[in-house]
Image (cartoon, rainbow, N blue to C red; front, side, top):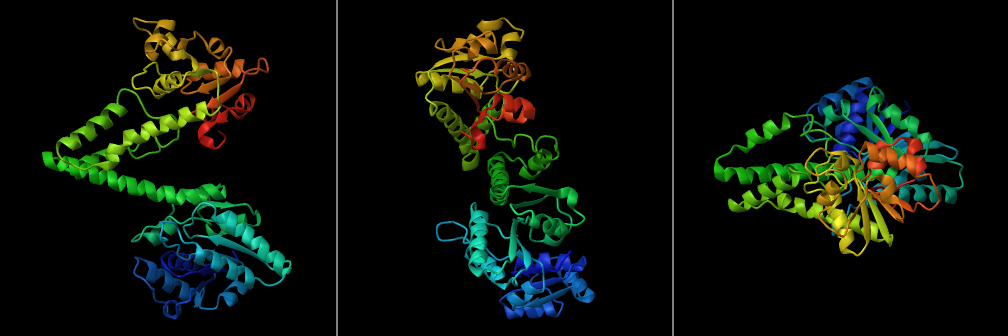
Length: 449
């Protein structure tokens, strides 16, 4: 690939420059601090990090790594700049992007007339940074009228102190985003040898992802610490408990349950979270994360109910009322709670669920639906066709395979079907693209509501 300028030789920038140079890419490291640049020029690591000194030495020995305080010279000697400057916490908790935008401005000013250049932002940035920077670059180029072209990409870093070099050299996931096709080749070249790990997304998702990832790690730390606090009074070893928990990679340390959807329910989750929070109270352990889980679950239910009511429907059909799609079990079922909330708001609500209707037991068919809802104001229906008849809003809550197939078969009939609300994303996840196009559901959790 073409030579790369690394702007900002802090933790991320030093690692990035060293790893790229050691692998054979020509790198010019840029920093205002002369002591950092001098260390790099002498083949020394400006900070302590395993393997960093070795990679810097390799880059210097290969003649692929040098440092400078002259950003303009660095840009004119390279084709891509990696922005690795800091985004410190501001007075109100926001990320301060002043240095990032200033670095981008400096790079754009340094691009020669008629030149083509790519800027890749590795710094952690807040939502909206890409759009602001993209507009800023376009305005600067238009003002200069030099026919230079500058493409912009985001490539958030996921490096851990103490293993940053290893993380950069053997990434689990590499995410990037750009609206400029000219930037794609540059990003792919940065990650040569790791193409299978590359995932392109939209800029807003890339911006949010880094913040979500770190928040998720923080939640895991808080959860493990709360487990320790509630286990200590009864002599349980929290290290043993968490070690055993993490040995199940199919559920406990996997992507399971990490999909947006309806609130959780069923015979276990609500009961067990409640029981654990209650037990913590008994032993005097302060566990705000655990205590807030059910509140968060209720807040999500309220959000979905508001999304329905915002459409001002008169008659609503709710398809799929089990605690999960295709399950006849309605214990602590979120769709059932949603139905009751809509009834309390004065709406006429019809409900159906093929799994509940067909489940073996003392009550079958409509009687099973009546028992599941537990509210005489609801209107149980023996089929999807019967439920959606006359409804001006249809809510897909937890539709199982049979109910999804029925919706696909029935929806195109007649123009007066009203609006189909995909409350938990089941239709968007489990239908084919032609089926989704046919139903044209409004995805509540996808920004279309």
